[in-house]
Amino acid sequence: MPSERSPRISVITVVYNAAALLENTIQSVTGQDVDNLEYIVVDGGSKDGTVDVIRKYESSISRWISEPDKGIYDAMNKGIRMATGEWIIFMNAADTFCHSKVLSTVMADIPDHIAFIYSDFYMSQPYFPGGKARFTADFKRGIILHQSAIYKRALHEVYGYYNVTKRIIISDYLFFNNVPEEVVMKVDEPISINTGDGVSAASWSFYQKKCADYIFGRISLPRMIRDVSYYKVKLVIRKLFGRGIISRLEKMRFKNTATVKL
Image (cartoon, rainbow, N blue to C red; front, side, top):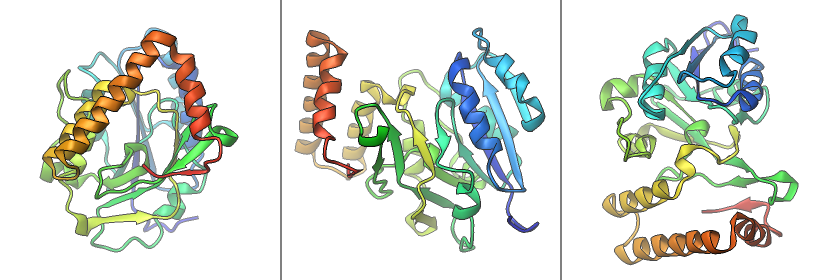
């Protein structure tokens, strides 16, 4: 077990109408082997029984609210403002930590100058071998999932909170771009397992990220055009032949792949 001097970690779960998915996430968070953990749940005013699940585990939750919000980033900002931990991480409904000792392992011996920790991540889909595949995260290339990023809450005091608009759904991506590389550290231990079913899995998010990559100088204009065009073709195929054809194509793609590099 970590010592009493271990930094306080605030885990924030944002949820809306996900009663069937929330319980696994709560159990994953409350099962972490750390003694200085704060758990916050921000519900967007669910009507499907999500609040009943929250109340079931209320004794293990530090603080929670259930009220309408202006979208996922508004809810995330609420969680940040409620948090008292030195470090924060988001673990939203349907996503989980890889195992019960993730936080105690990842947070061991962090250099004093580090303010942002991230790791590779697992995506869970039926067409992956064993049901999941490990993806390589890369801070310089902007390949990061907030479920696999633990960072100091003070960064929001410096760079502000997440942008809340209906059109921008990559606010975490834009926020992470402000963080200087010298305070960033990648750890070997994968932090989370993710379903990929969140709002940022949509095509509009993909287009935004590619445009942002071009603006930040991460990719060339021809690369941006090529990638966006490919994705549009994929959407056309899905519309013509249904979601099943895409799943079959993805299954063929990952048939002999255990680790995926983006």
